[in-house]
Image (cartoon, rainbow, N blue to C red; front, side):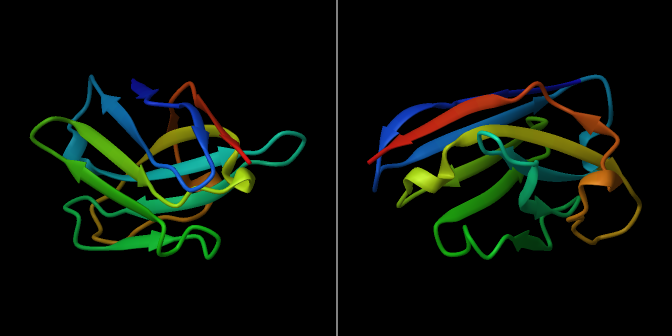
Length: 124
């Protein structure tokens, strides 16, 4: 089970940190990812992190502004969002993909487990 939290309303240029708490499984056996779904649009990839944090990957639209991280001891993944823009407004979802590899995963369809989503709104 995945539980995303930390969403809210922030002004453009501000910061938020999202958390995704996992339970019921061995967290370190999963590559993790953040996705978002803007109003009226399809869900899109934001960032991914490998099982032991050796690799990360970002969408071009967030590169340099967002940072993904994880703490396997706490079964938690994070997304630090800085220099936020109104176009970052979306419902943000965390997801988990079971793997023995050390790669990140960017395809939506590769993830087996999804959290419930948390709303992020950036005002201009």
